[in-house]
Amino acid sequence: DVKVTQSSRYLVKRTGEKVFLECVQDMDHENMFWYRQDPGLGLRLIYFSYDVKMKEKGDIPEGYSVSREKKERFSLILESASTNQTSMYLCASSHLSPGQGARQPQHFGDGTRLSIL
Amino acid sequence: AQTVTQSQPEMSVQEAETVTLSCTYDTSESDYYLFWYKQPPSRQMILVIRQEAYKQQNATENRFSVNFQKAAKSFSLKISDSQLGDAAMYFCAYRSTNTGNQFYFGTGTSLTVIP
Image (tube, rainbow over all chains, first blue to last red; front, side):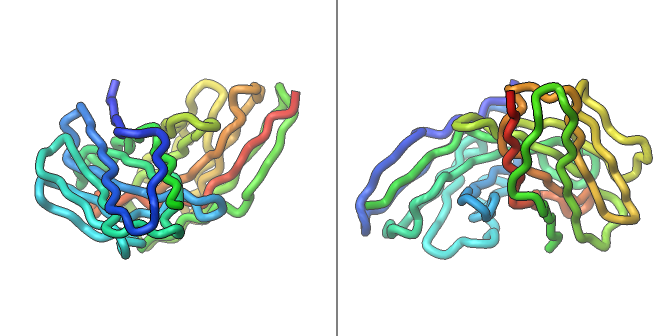
């Protein structure tokens, strides 16, 4: 089975801190994603990456950056945490599209519930 | 960007009954995939069922089936013989075949199963 592992289930940080959320997958997936999940808003894409050192902005990239130095690892960075970044963060991975790769689903980690005080 | 709409924020069903969750999407493409995901409380999001747009036959996985209406751009999920373990958030998602590195999700439907 595909395993997507997020480094923390729960995290509490202070306003202004630099925060790192780590994600590792073990299925050699090309794509990796970071989402933010808030009640009533569903999943909103922050950033995704389709290859090492490659990244694409999603719908809400402001206040975030990402790093992908190795294929299996995708990090989300909150440069200066703010209270409006309190949320559930989900990491996911998938095979590359187009063609048959598109039929493969995303696989998700357990999520990190981040609180910024 | 494609949009995916789930118009039912919350649904409830009696145990052993059948419930249908709605999903519509907007796209100009003809070739794509649709997914339903389940997220139980405090647990990992998992795939429930998948539908290829080029297939007319509706996908089925045990008690879960879809009603895929391509012309209407509708993709509903039917859960038969509902069980307590079906209680979860359900998300509908779209992925293009040709430009499909990105998945587009609806806002989710919270399903309660009443004993």
